[in-house]
Image 1 (cartoon, rainbow, N blue to C red):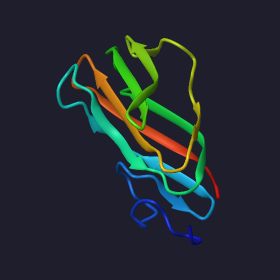
Image 2: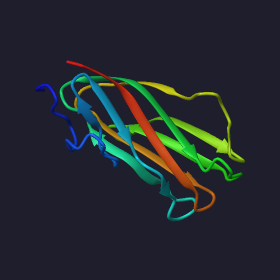
Image 3: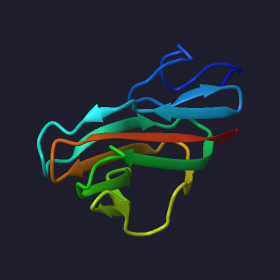
Image 4: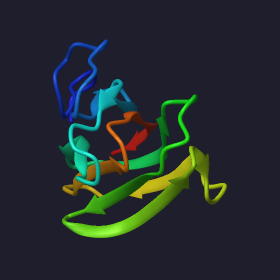
Length: 130
């Protein structure tokens, strides 16, 4: 992949579902989104990696003042590889940031749901190895 070319849009301030690659760094910011329907998983990040390996971390959050339950799932090529529960607005386990290694040509989806119409966000950041 040529220097400065990414998998997603080249607007480096981009917020959306794509992974942005600049040189040997990559990131994805979903931005704050509201769960449209309680109990229904909503896709916050979705992209397919290119010919490089991604090594980095992912973090997620809900409204910091909330006591809602919310759940995060990460899928690689349609296979659920990781999930977490936040009960009463608190992490049920101490797993953030989550270390990730994503192989080349992998379809990635990060989905979140809540028991209310909650505000949520997901980020990923890391390095690209060609």
